[in-house]
Amino acid sequence: MNSPKILLTAEAILEKEFKVDARGYNPKDVDKFLDMVIHDYTELFNFVKKQNKEIKDLTKENNELKDELRKMHNILEAADEDTSNRNYNNVDLLRRISNLEKVVFGKNE
Image 1 (cartoon, rainbow, N blue to C red):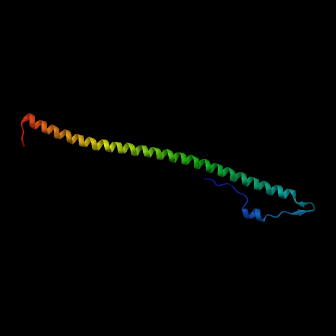
Image 2 (image 1 turned 90 degrees about the horizontal axis):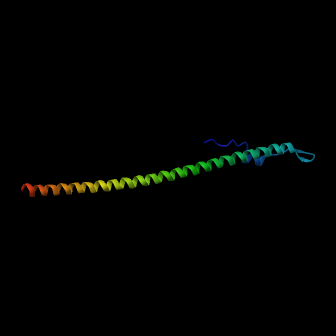
Image 3 (image 1 turned 120 degrees about the horizontal axis):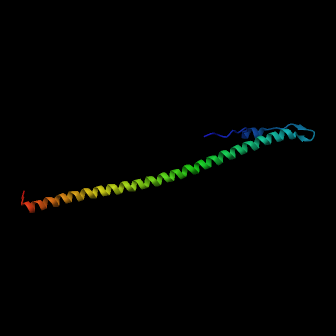
């Protein structure tokens, strides 16, 4: 992710000194400095906005993947139950067939 191109640090803002002329601070210096502050705030705001959107998108995707995982677990559990029931039913059917064969064909083992 690209980080914002910040021109000023908190320390630079704190330590900034403007030239003083007869009427006070030089307006051009103050305007130039304030333009840099505005630029930095704009860059930072856009960066935070972009990061928040990415967080929102990733959270949504994460929730969708969790839901899909839950569904897959449920399908797998149902398949496991069905398989175990089917195996039990198959064994039961084989026993019944064997018993019927004994009765029909008279095989007593």
